[in-house]
Length: 288
Image 1 (cartoon, rainbow, N blue to C red):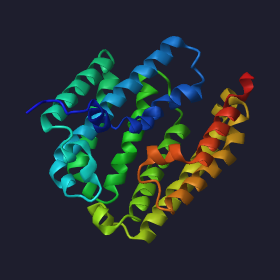
Image 2: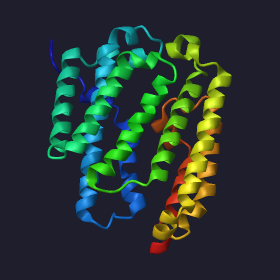
Image 3: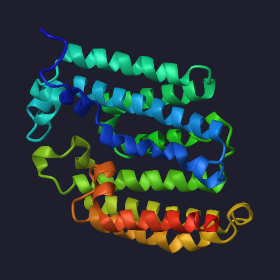
Image 4: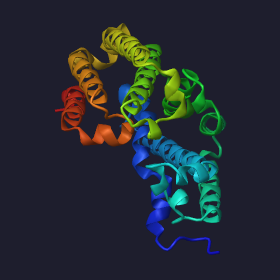
């Protein structure tokens, strides 16, 4: 049997590159510290981003390899490259080995980054193979993946993280995780995750409301903190209404059944993209 599928596009699909947008969390420390003028630091963060792209694709491949038999019987997941047979198991494992080697090479010489990447892969493999069936633990692991990215983009490159920014990150990622579960609740029973049986709609709504409120509170405290005022003057304060709108808009989309794939749905909503652009414009306005 050939190691390679008939089309290289299938290997690219297997890596799910559209999910790399989640790795943008590594740039949070660089953005909020406004140290993008340092070429050396920017290159370091780009290296961290590339390492997490390798690690996240590695996790997706291992997940699809593990679930290929059950995915082949699933009414939607049967289209995945391994489940459909467009990529062989041998080719998938070879690609996983290449990504592992690339990730290790990118993290070499940075023990903190190596540790964070190892934790990311370990937690996500445990999630894919078992812990995604455990309610609340499943979403906590999803959130931890984002937090590890944020820490990698700060601690691993020597940028001291803001405590309020870290708290905002924790609550935001939990919010996104529970929104993902809410969106999945709109799917037909045959396509829902098994863990959804433990998530009554009212409970998910409570979790979303709690984590969204906490996100808004901690971001507002971050925006008005002496640390932020000293570094960003009052610009961050003016971004608070934009963040409120963005979270409310995303919650609206989730209650329409969207948000199961955070990366895809964030990029498809023009209003969310507009809010992101407005936030960025306000943030960098002092440079014009």
